[in-house]
Each structure stands twice: as structure tokens, then as C-alpha cells.
Image (cartoon, rainbow, N blue to C red; front, side):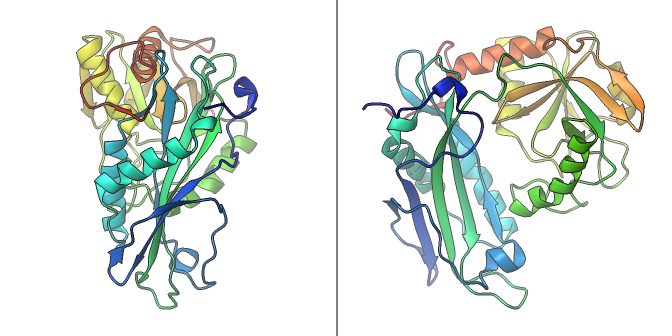
Amino acid sequence: MEKANLDWSNIGFGYIKTDKRYVSNFKDGKWDEGALVDDDKITISECAGVLQYAQTCFEGLKAYTTEDGHIVCFRPDLNAQRMVDSAKRLEMPVFPEERFIEAVVETVKANEAFVPPYGSGATLYIRPYMFGSSPVIGVKPADEYQFRVFATPVGPYFKGGAKPIVIKVSDFDRAAPHGTGNIKAGLNYAMSLHAIVTAHDEGFSENMYLDPGTRTKVEETGGANFLFVTKDNKVVTPKSDSILPSITRRSLVYVAKEYLGLEVEEREVYFDEVKDFVECGLCGTAAVISPVGKIVDHGKEIAFASGMEEMGPVTKKLYETLTGIQMGRIEAPEGWIKVIK
């Protein structure tokens, strides 16, 4: 198929309308068969559950063109599982995992012209999401829902390479104890907007959120999990019930252990420990790993030995190995790559 006429290396990280999107509706206790549609507009009641009580959740994953020319997705089964968890927590009907994967595959196939070519640095970002669509005026779950998947090509998250960023310790909490921090609910991200705008206004790239119970332990940022490296090359990731279980972070942990032979600790990480680490990164779908060069805690700076010029050596090796797996340059563990075409 002929590719869309886009400057793949300069499209940026934003929304570009593509040809098709997948839609399925839940009504009278069941999901309909679903279909691909042309229309990118949604019409719902002014009293829809999503508008009144933020009853919505979403996922994010990517489709890639591999070195041998195949179009693939990376571990969509984990996105499907995570959306099940999100739906249950928000009292929404579960969209079956096998149908989730089928919907992703159909959406990518229908938008093949927008899957960037190998080597461009760009990918096709895929956004499955679900929301309460029927009118709800009392505080209760909606009766009807819509599940949708759209796709949009995005450029490389870091143009010219990933340079270490400076982040701040936030005065805000990302999640409440026993709240919704461990699911991908839209309301979590709405709550983080003021904090991230404030951080940007102050010259920082992101926030470090501490645990909401004691504010002594590292949790995550607004949209990524933390990954630290010790002086003896041990990889450490924070563990908490209010952290979103990042698919990228879980994959990096496996890569660290099984591909690079590194020791990994998934445990509570106290903020007092952070000064002793030599590398720090933020891991998520969009950038894979964003290196952190410095953390500022109310004027007090914690500078990592890896510096502000480039990724630390362990972080870089993790990044190169995982992206190599995603792009087909390195053999993937069984089940990690879903071949679409």
C-alpha cells in the first residue's frame, strides 16, 4: 500500500486524523459486533456518564515497521489485560481481551498507509478507550458504553536524541491511598494537569510524585514509571499499589534480567535513597526511556553521575535492547510481538 504523503521525520508528537477507527457499543448488557467507521466525531448526550462523572479509561500502544518490513504491535495482550482491570475498577463492562486485540489489529490494517516506514523514527500510536455514553444524573455507573480505537502517526519523541531532563519533586499527590493510581483512568490524568503545567512554568520537564500516604517513597511521574541504576549496575524500580503497571517498565525489567544479565530489584524506594543512584530514567510507551539528569527538591538539587549530556550507560543499553526487540533487530521473547502484516 502506498504510504501517506507525510514528512515522517518531522511530523511531531500530536494528533493526525487517519482513515478509519474502530467502534463498538455496549447496550442491554452486551457489546455489539463492532465495526470500522470513517467518522472521527462522537455524538453523545449532554448528560453522558463520561461528561458528568469522568467514567472513562484508555490505553496506549504503538505499531511499528520492523527491519524486515513487517507491521507489528508490541505486547497488546498486556494492554488488553490492563484495560480489563481499569474497567472493573470504574464499574464499566469489560471489553473482552481477544476482541481488544482484534480491534487493534483491524484499526492498524485499515490505516496501513499511516504506519511510518522503518528507520524514520516515527510510529503509529494506537489509542483504545472506553467511556460511559448514556445519560447519568445521579452518581452511579452509566448503562451504556462505547469502546473505540483510533490511530495516529507520531514522530520520534526525542528529536536529535534523548537528552537528560530536569524534574521536580511535586507538592501534589498523583493518586490517593487505595485510589485509582494503579489503573489507566482518565481522571488520573486530569488530576495531574495542574501539577505538570506548574512544573513547566517553573522550567521543569516533569514531576516526581511521592507516595500519598507518607510522602517518603518514590512513586512515578504523571505518565511514566521510574527506573534507577545503582553504583554497581543494579536496576531498581519502585513498587507500590498506587503506581500504574507500565508495560514498558515490565518489559525493561525482563530485558535487564534475561538479555543483559543485570540484577533487578522491584521494591519500595525511599526518596532519601535517590541521591545514591547513578542513573535515572522515566519509562513509558511514548519515549520508552526518558533519561533524568537532575531532580530538584524545593531548591535542593540531586544530580546523577550520568550527567546532563546523554543517557547513562546502563539506561542506554536497556533502551537500545528494547527498541531493538520492538523493531525486529533483536529476537523477541515469545509472545511479545504481534505481527499484523
